[in-house]
Length: 459
Image 1 (tube, one colour):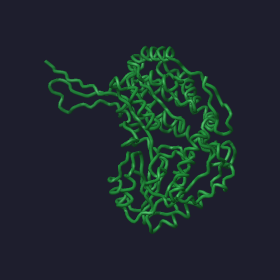
Image 2: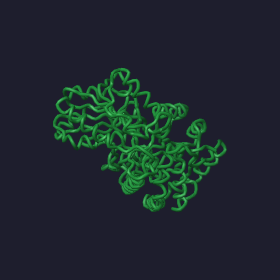
Image 3: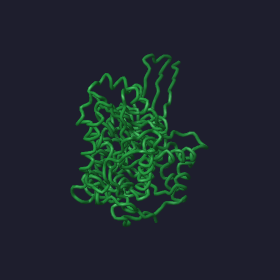
Image 4: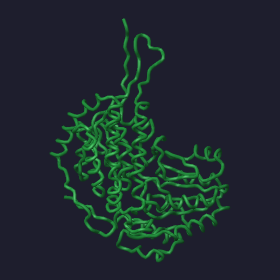
């Protein structure tokens, strides 16, 4: 059994039985049996099952919100948003399947028939993290199933009840046995699972180190492997910015979910002409946050997922301060913030530079560094000075300028006047150590299918 320790109070919230090698083999065998039946259904038939699947999950949204809060610490006032986001993305991806999976038919059909079809891969392993347990997993699960694949989900032991919710919803929706299954696996058994010869594709969301481990487990075979990894997402605040809008949204982008988001804002570059005003406003809003027990009313900043994670961020902050940075938010303003616990106050650091790992290595916590820049060129140079490239945002009143700057930023998504957001109509992807592959949008279906050409000659 594996215990899930709630970051709220350190109690055991639930315990989950780990699956072993025999369970893996049995689950894969069931998936193999189910695949041809599921793949043979029409897209509309699969869509009917999937809409029932989505409804079965959202029917339990009140209970799910409480479970999310207790498992990973997000304020209960914010947890329902995850279920709503899950529904929006799922319904969108289901609705676009016909278009995304349509064959490419050549205008010239001589000598008989020529077209390229999209066909399912087979058995897809989906490996999902705890920080957005539904919003990360839905990106892969829905298009994979809609494309005719069968799915085996391995979720984090921090949020095992999410996997259980999925499994119950699949059963309630009447999805045929073996089409969607779950496994609770440790690292060793996860490598065994995805390395099995019968696994045809993998979708992983997690750390860079996790991505390397996934690649190593697959180095003996050639299958599609999507990796959504870490981020150190930057924002650039230009001189022509709507100042109050940028401040409010960037504070939220930095501290929502206690900063535990791959696309959260971790570093901000501000034009020197608005730097002081921006920093003053940013600090004022940050000081108004309420850190505490996330089940209580009025709390908008909960604990980090584990004490070890909070200690990592504390150490990162400490090294920056030792090297000349200043923290503009007094931790004593947040009574719940205590060493030796996962409760950590938000931190706004200035006088930072890229010799400090708080500006170069993923923090995944409630800390942000703010640097003054003299012009666009300096901002772009610093934004690109990173091993990561998931998202970046430009805050300006000039859309043409945002476009030209965006063309120069090494990232998967460029935002203007917003951040920390996934649009299901747009491809979600990264560059550099932020990973490879695509989820969401019509292009997201590319990763869960393979192309098959038909070239018929009529005699």
